[in-house]
Amino acid sequence: MLGVPKELIEHCLKVDPKATPKKQRLRRFAPDKREAIKRELAKLLAAGFIKEVYHLEWLANPVLVLKKYNNQWRMCVDYTDLNKHCPKDPFALPRIDQVIDSTAGCVLLSFLDFYSGYHQIALKEGRPNQNGVHHPLWSIRLYHNVFRVEECRSNLSTGHPTAPCGSTTPNVEAYVDDVIIKTRFHDEFITNLEETFNNLRRFRWKLNPTKCFFGVPQGKLLGFIVSHRGIEANPEKINAITAMDAPKTIKDVQKLTGCMAALNQFISRLGERGLPFFKLLELHDKFKWTEEANQALRDIKHHLQSPPILTAPQPGENLLLYIAATTHVVSTTIVVERQEEGHAFGVQRPVYFINEILSKSKVRYPMIQKNTLWYTHHFQEASPLL
Image (cartoon, rainbow, N blue to C red; front, side, top):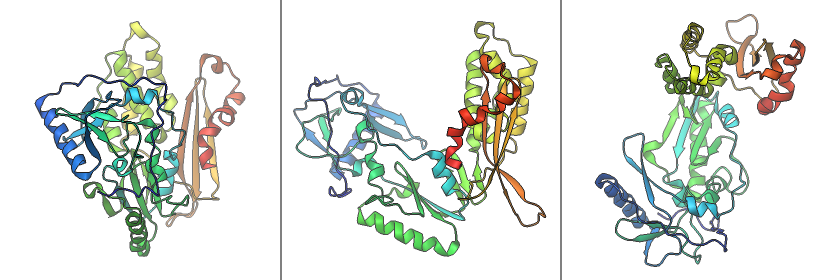
């Protein structure tokens, strides 16, 4: 595999010269994991991404193997020690909310996935052997980029076909190694694909065909379901709550509140609905599941049976803001009003739900001051929409 041209992007490890090289002992693995490591390293060796070496300055990189969603083994490298002596990459990833909003509402979507995307970016030659990896039979050195090195994480985004020379393609969104081709009108579908694939060929990006989908009406993107209808909650996250039994310990309550937080954008007045659970978290050793909490759990499950579909606002479109304050909670809903066929008046569609459970000091605020909390605390969270 040729990989991305070095003229476009090439990474150079900037390890602190004062750092003492570390060599860890080879970890032991079960026979099935050992064979999986050999198979993966054989693929990288055949592709020219790695090379056998005999003397390495750094060998603090035992191979870690994790299960993929398809029950196959995933090979990773633990660069914990190396990361301690490399500068942190300040490159900011795109905001997930903005990527989702710009993708929703398209009639057709195409999802692309780079084949071992980080391995397609070369490391600068002539550097000391700082990224060595243990192998069950020998030691190897990587000659291409790796995700586990924190200093390298932005390279894939800066080398994307959406920004080959600092420009962006309006019909393409990219987040790390995931690329989405957007089609808002059916007659633009082939043109959008042709433009994107021309860029991919130009910069020699290789795709994983098993993870690519073309011309689908909806798909999963960064934990959300996006389609022409809007933004929907991930059914897996919903099922994690609806299939949950009544908590029996504090840890079970923490798990429940964590699942609710993952769906906070889709649950209106989440603070009020989840207030009984947060009260239980304050009990610590005196935990006791109450009827109030049990009713709140049933209410959450009933609400998630038909979760709302969020709408992405259009540029220049007016947004309506609703604020409701109670003794302990401030809830905010941002909606957009549009004319729809079959309705004599405008139809309001939700865009975003924001909730805050007030601290003990804020509970004593006058009601008018609680309503103004949105402008001081929640404005930054909703600023990309405004």
